[in-house]
Image 1 (tube, one colour):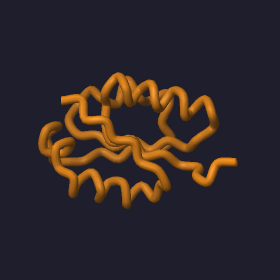
Image 2 (cartoon, rainbow, N blue to C red):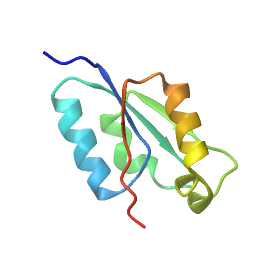
Image 3 (cartoon, rainbow, N blue to C red):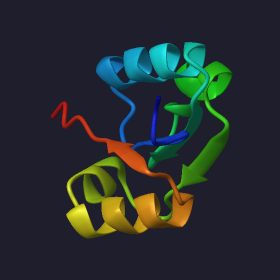
Image 4 (cartoon, rainbow, N blue to C red):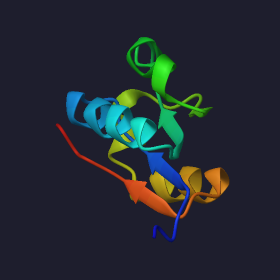
Length: 86
């Protein structure tokens, strides 16, 4: 039995897409945070909540641990997946 229902994904990489697809298929509520443009198109079919981090650039957001933690707390999820694909 799972102890959590929500997964926070702080990334727009191909690896994160696989996490989203699999977790969504298993019935988890998916929350994604992103910065920049173009990322949402890949995730849109597999995400329940989207948190856009404005006005940060892609590198400002994904390389800032403080911003990632802030977005994760805002999402109120129990589990976070972060894959640094830079």
